[in-house]
Length: 107
Length: 118
Image (cartoon, rainbow over all chains, first blue to last red; front, side, top):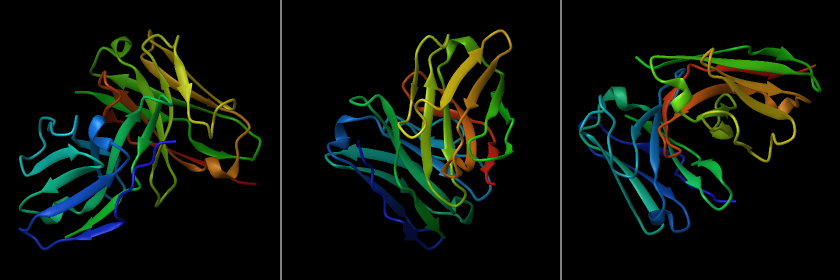
């Protein structure tokens, strides 16, 4: 089955840039979606189709995807960005949803 | 405003059954595929199941295949998950999520907790 690997944690100072990666075999050929989950809340879509931002998501959030790594970048990090972040793809070979292991962002 | 509201969670014994429901509003329900995703408290997200728009096409994670059944009533704008032969490892918060048309989960419910314990 397809596996997505994320670093368990990332720590960044307020106002700086956070980079969260998602590794997978040839992930650059897939569409990657990113979800933010604040403590005690449901996940929220923050980036879809690698680079697109849903309405209401700040421009500080951006995404990229190439080769074996997809990246979520959060610029000018704020305390409210502190959350767990999960990447997700659809594995067409198995026709199953796949989530990354998740990264806890500490501000 | 898109809203998804899950219900039906609770305590079940190993080997028992529960039926979850997800009431949808604020969008054309019968135009969207729908998913169930679960999360063990403090752990990661696990995709569970998907239904196409009329439930004629359903798929499951290997961990629940043969035990769980996804269904929907488009007239009632409700998605269901029938969970049979429950195991302790099925303990999790269960979320329903809307598919945007490309297997991206663009809206999520608040989740309902299922606890399987004797």
